[in-house]
Image 1 (cartoon, rainbow, N blue to C red):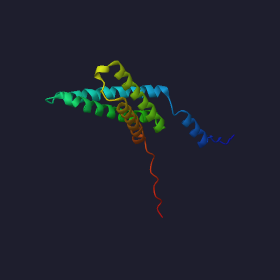
Image 2: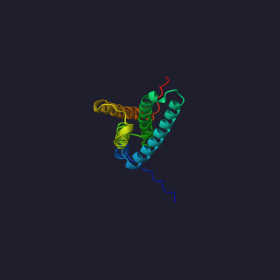
Image 3: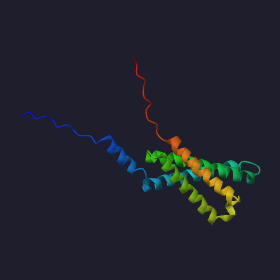
Image 4: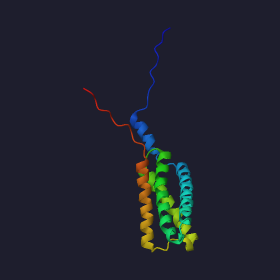
Length: 153
């Protein structure tokens, strides 16, 4: 009548690690993080335009504030993407940075009069910088594991 309770089998850590690594890239999460990043970018551009509005000559501040808002958008986008995905900081940062740069390039093609007016080399360097900022944001936004506690003797 007394039967022994069967032990529950837990998956091996290597198997769990493999399935976790297989789910690093999720297009739906990338799309959600990109939409949040675009919302943050629009909010930053509105704040930058309000800051420029209160100066005597806002024309001088349009380019620096726009570049600063774009850089902050890329950085915050990296943080958002890694927080939503949970792991794979390099891939999340690269995907989000590439998507942000693609949106910026498409916007500059449609609104040629509103583009920065830089040469192609400087524009390419700016886009590469935005990509690097997105990767840096993803690495800095990554959740840290608990630090191992020192053993007391």
